[in-house]
Length: 424
Image: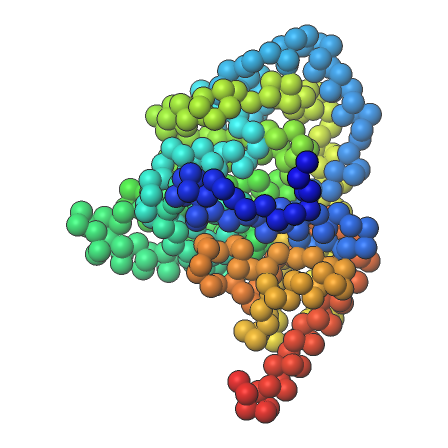
């Protein structure tokens, strides 16, 4: 038997599809092993804190999923999802003034599968898609399999800078023989953006939709965090303002990520194509997980439980912002989210966060380097980092930021020394 510790050469390298060359492993997935160590304080993974879920309640709804529904949850199901689960989704969407019927909904295996299905249905090699920059690294990973050209638009405290989006679309239109920008879709996370934590203002949302309609471009609204608001006032969903928007969400941040249950809401012709590619992907999602979701949202005080978790996040967010103020250098900047799970911090250009991570790990801290939240090879985001405040306790968050502050100061002092010596 071959020693599993030995390096294995890949004898099948010439057989893989060319798209594999552009695919990168997820920075967060790579950090999971390190983050699971007892001596590590993890600010990397956006794991919802489900440790306080009422397990007796969850046990009951799980038992009901079997005892009351019989074998329905153990059999194959419809590709689009159970009708009863889609009814739950329709009811949840009314909270956001999104009026849909079950014919407008497809249940997916989490939000991540929804992203992959969007990519599979729309992207050909070389197609242009537009995202915020930085954006959710899982979306970049899902889309990368279909080899798009990703154009990023920076954000500020009001979300995607739609004036820059307008300028980019005008530029692409000039380059196009049709006079219209050859863009397949604009992907955005308007609420508590991952990794930025910022929320798109109402004015920016209106401008985005106006541009999308002017240039006949699809908008994909990814909204896993919309219910996780602990400050401020809600802003209308893009889908509630324009029913041509493709809307994605999940129960991962409001119930349990392990159930891998999300959904796509889209115009019906688009949904028909998505359902077609979904058949080839998984035939159907887990009926049992869907039944559990139905019972949880139909039979429990799920909103009360979510409110408790949101209050935990609020306190942890405050702890992180206070620690950043106390321990990060004055040249650093960071976002101040009103909800969600993340803060985006930007350091002086002399600090390279991918290199910083290895030193931080030695100090017992993980974070996500910013370059992973941009398209591969762009070289952007190397002085930034995503910091998750959702899982660690306030005292641990403060200690982690203190350690990071020390590592950053060491790097900056080294830079100052070289600069003073004229080496740089």
